[in-house]
Length: 196
Image (cartoon, rainbow, N blue to C red; front, top):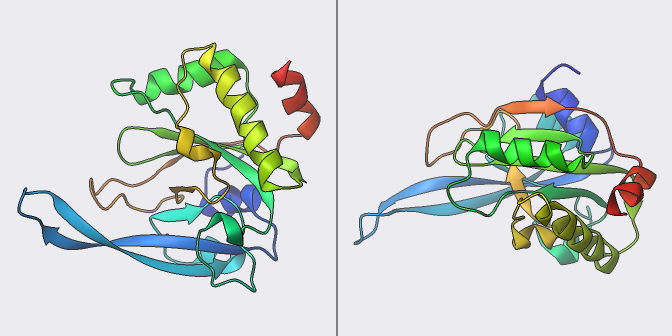
């Protein structure tokens, strides 16, 4: 599948989904010499996201249009997408991708963070029913990937997790968040087979 924003977002979201986004604004360096940022939150329809200027972050799951649009677990409308991000220092992107491929886990998209990681997203054909079910699926994924020395970031258990937006810019590094791979939505039954 062609690597572009439209294909990327159409795998993750449905036409009527409402998507929370975030950008960072540099505020300057603190007394320790570290850059500080202010988060600017917003939300967009799928069409606005696919056709507009790319944000830095997207909430991986759609939010309820009746909510304030923030990327909070309490605002999640559909439990469809699960993020896998490596939480092990010193493991480069090629090795992260190799370990994922070795595991045989099905996934839908891969995006370069513009920094040190590749963000693999599983977009399910059928949404999960609740946050509790979502977290149990994440725990099963985390356990399965550990067999292949892939240490999943535990924060990804939250359905409101932010991921790097397709072709946005990582504000810290100035590097584009390139889409590395787009497949398709994953049949739930394929995940259930992988869990075994």
